[in-house]
Image (cartoon, rainbow, N blue to C red):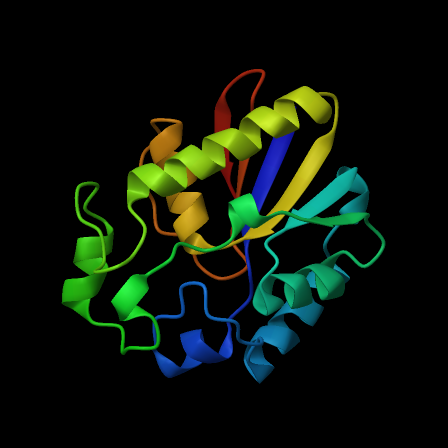
Length: 175
């Protein structure tokens, strides 16, 4: 099974430099434009199905990028709950804290909790879609947790950047 995890396009909160976590917000004008540009050269025939977080920014990215693929929303790939940090300015200190496995934002979700959700989602895909090529449009926090869950090198991921994992060979490709 091959899984491609793609981070949504730039959201309004990304544009403003504000933590969003599970708050719902739309793509920014630039995010919409860049997704349309990417869609021109994006080969959706490489995938059998698309899973998306239920948040607006991921659904917008999905509908623009792969309008012809079957789309399934799944709460297990919703962004990390950032608790009290949601709707606050992004700071270097908070970003460093989010990358510490043992630290959790006040009233937020831990990396272990997210990794558990991600592992449950992967197990579900292995059981139901083991022979499919799957595109998953989600969030940076989920892709980070995925890297942790698979014991991969932790790498930041930009908007509209993807990580592909071949679960048969456990190979990771950064696109």
